[in-house]
Image (cartoon, rainbow, N blue to C red; front, top):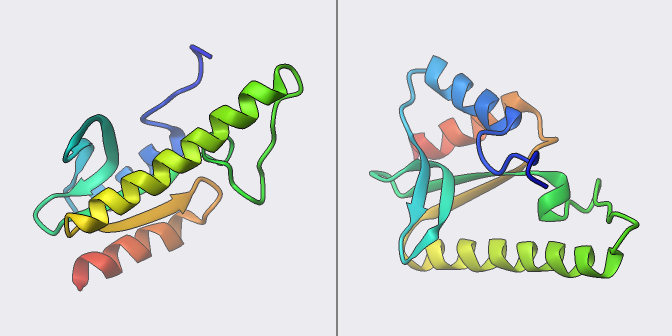
Length: 122
């Protein structure tokens, strides 16, 4: 478990690099207001836009979800808790006036960056 990255994953780094190359500045690992132990992967506090890049395994992607065979009951509960936390975090931010964008790690980088740029232009 120690080897599993919880932040700065390859996909997050790729998205941030593409945004930076487009002269877009952001905050990384920005604390969720009211929930200091949670963080927004990529935040634009001035525009109140929160971007999350979710890993398929940890966040229960419907296309790529797998549950390890050993201790499968514990893993199923853990992954369900992660999904509930994501829903709760999205709701909390939305209530506070943030626009929340969630992407999967398997989404095309170009599509993710374009969606973020479109949201920033609104």
